[in-house]
Amino acid sequence: MAIIEDLEVLTAFETRVLPELERNIAQFDRLYLTIDLDVLPAREMPAVSAPAALGVPLATLLRIVEPLCRSGKLQAVDLVEFNPLFDIDGQGARTAARVAWQIAHWWR
Image 1 (tube, rainbow, N blue to C red):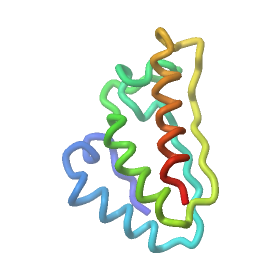
Image 2: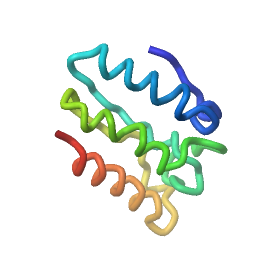
Image 3: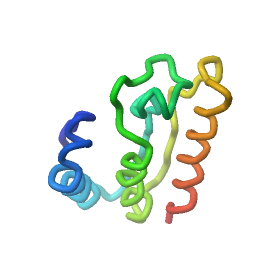
């Protein structure tokens, strides 16, 4: 398993991220997904204690999550680091809810 940093996710998604994701899905029989919400840019997820200056945009994160959900191997998912004390007008709550809804919609 490789570590791929946010800048590389933004610049090499098709050539680096998707192939690595496909390799990992093929390698394991069962998958457990943890999404640390502070991976999202601060403008999309203000409700975390350590907001990302750059981060991975929500649309890109969902492109990563979709094949995991549709793989038939996903066993459990958790979303972590959401903190309503840092939320701005419920923006972070709506973003977290969208991620959760999308996962539930795709999960097989």
